Length: 211
Image (cartoon, rainbow, N blue to C red; front, side, top):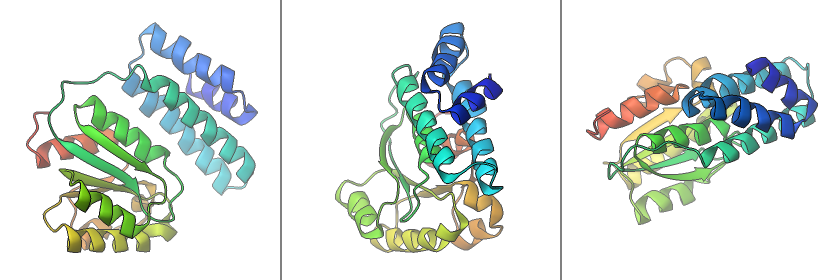
């Protein structure tokens, strides 16, 4: 299914991509989490690899990503949710980071686990991020960074949030962190990675929510 979905992405065939994840996937009993992590996420990683190796153009990468955004939007209506746990998480990409797909998937996994999620999307300026977490304080902030050249923006965001809201727990995720060993120790955060399930498990542990 992943290969067929990837082929639909590369052809720009939105209808076929949606048919695969909804009719061939969800309606035939494949769990939402599996469709998201094993089909859409891994196909998107392959799209990223093809783009980095100049096999596909920027236009093709954008077209494929738009299809995954559409697929996630259609799947969202079927999102299975645990009972609300009373905890709120803000999920945001750092300033300049336009790749929001991973953060959106993480938001869905958190929501499935019963968290109330405020997803801010791509490239949130530091001052607006600080305003968001201080005017309506969440229980947790999760920051996403995909490209390594946005790591300075991540450091700036972490420093600004800690100055404004020193007791607010922070989690950080994204592909950029796989290529930047030592950032976890540098920032002193309990989770750095690309696994949405791991992020949820860490959030539950930090906030003492049964996982």
